[in-house]
Image (cartoon, rainbow over all chains, first blue to last red; front, side, top):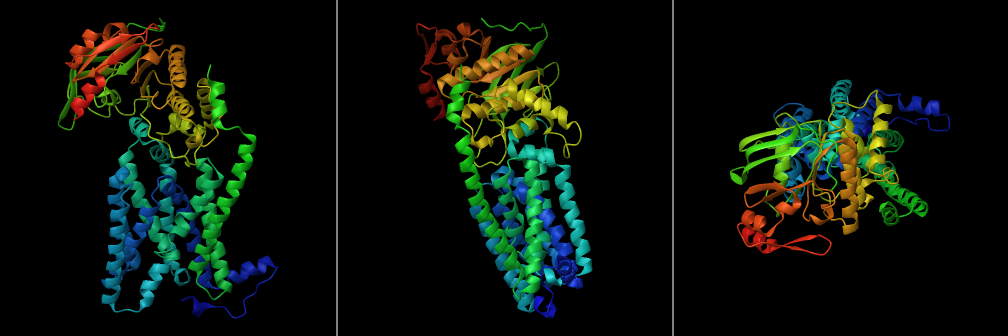
Length: 304
Length: 271
């Protein structure tokens, strides 16, 4: 628990080298930064496609299904991450197989999500453990991460990022223009399933940092901000990853000095970044339309 | 007439006793026709008659229920790089944060695995060339969802052209365009086809904007298929026989054709 690790009179000032030294003074902070960075990178990269494919709600539901998996795993005596992965990956495969039909299934997804939370609640009660277990899974426990957890996170993060790099072009094609992509020989359905399974891995990782309930902050928010500033997919992916890392670093650093939970800081930074992005991109767009003429005039120009 | 100069003797499409079915439902059958290389064919027929299904057969997305089909000298197969395809459009999300240029780029390497490494300059040149060929330079860098229907249609056409195809399959590219833009796009397609020796199958609802540019018309209706010159196929006798119902074709002083009786017919069959 974070309170136990709070350093006595930590240094804070203009000497940035000393601040960084201070932040990395304890092993729990080193692990938090290592795992946090890996998680943020993979969440940002895959998050761009989550937003582009309109799968935000599905990603959110995946994490809730993971809650039942994580608490269930503890109940049967295995590590929460195992239950998380098993539950989210299975649910992801089903969602992926549904493909386009998943859109507009908000009611079904919502019901599965609620039931999963209910199951998780039951498992927690049956375990008769402390409420800390559930709280940790729901809101993250980044300051409780061990060196071994970091290693597991590293592998999962690597899988996520390598997958997106390996399928980048056909995934973009299938996302933007499914019918043409299919005609061009892109395995649209296979990609949809693989994407959701890998998203499940990324979600399971991210649960460690921000928990089941705050997952939007790392998967959806950075991509949503990035989309406001670039219309180039490659830059969008990159910007989303960078933003996710910045959100995480900032949240961890602030939480080191203040006695409040890191999940609060990361979600707060994510939320206000999005608001700021909306306002800023609105201003930029208004200036741009002042210079560029609206399309109607150009359309006339192109007619013979 | 604007018949193609690049027409060679080898046919682009050969269908023999072809039938199309979706699941257990037979859509049309006994289709025997040829489309020559460089020919511009308009595909007409009522809703649900199986026009798009014909394109799906040609693309290898649906196997023939019976008969044989050859496209560009081989059996249809998915991922045929020689075919450029523009499907019927649903609305592109206004807020889609992707430039028209990126859509066009997918036509070159969207089906390749991994991220683009090397060859970038060459590919950008091809994208530029495709965008220039449809005269879309002015708005290719704007988010595609913010463009007008005609502008989107041009960029999607550029995407199909970027893959350097020999054949274009266009599913209702003129739908939701005003009459003026319908004529402009139809002429653009014909011009590009002539310049590149492309065979074109274009699905449409109204033959009139296409009359100056098409070589032949393929009519898909009532479980069958008929092909011929517009003046031969779109006649009271031919259509009445094809639909097995009284259809009348009227002509105005500009040579435009109006098919009367279709709406009642398709409504009757949809019910």
